[in-house]
Amino acid sequence: GRMGFDAVTGPELEDEHHNFVALNIPQQHPARDPLDNFYLTDPDGENPLLLRSQTSTVQIRVMENTQPPVRIVSTGRVYRPDEHDATHYSMFHQVEGLYVDKKVSMVDLKTTLYQFARAMFGEDAEIDLVPSYFPFTEPSAELYVKMDLGKGPEWMEIGGCGMVDPAVFEHVGYDPEEVTGFAFGLGIER
Image (cartoon, rainbow, N blue to C red; front, side, top):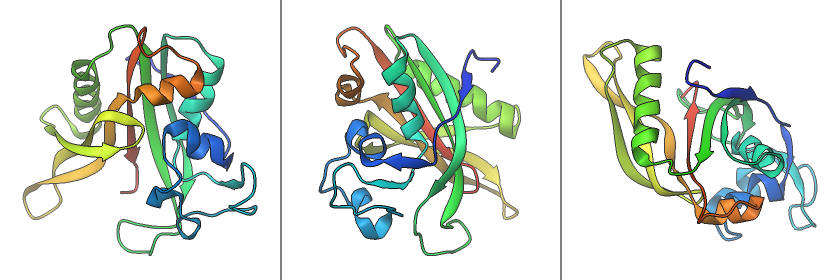
């Protein structure tokens, strides 16, 4: 809130369009596999319903109904049929952020994440962005924070981030020649 982000929420029961299509996740992507999701209607039907697998769906819903600038943060439960272990469970929580305006850059993203890390983990918090791939951002990165988990300081991956892919902007009716933006998603329990 101190950085100008508005808190928003969205439905946990989602349609395939908001959970995958508008986020530029192609049909053949492993994240869309029916065995990796909790579908409530036939996954081969028209725009099937499922329990959302990410809170990025909220970003899509906000952009569909709001013209830039957009600066939001959303938190909520997400569902994936993961094998349960110390860092994975079938239901967990995410916090996502989205900033869209003219001339938003990776510098804005890194500064936001750095300020977040300092607020959450202390003034000495260190972050690192490691290049990665997500269908909805380009370029994309994994966010690591240096933490002392009892065996001395070590780097822990806490989420993903990147610049919003122009294809996502096209899905929501934004002109990618006019606006840019960043998004990040952090797994709270993870």
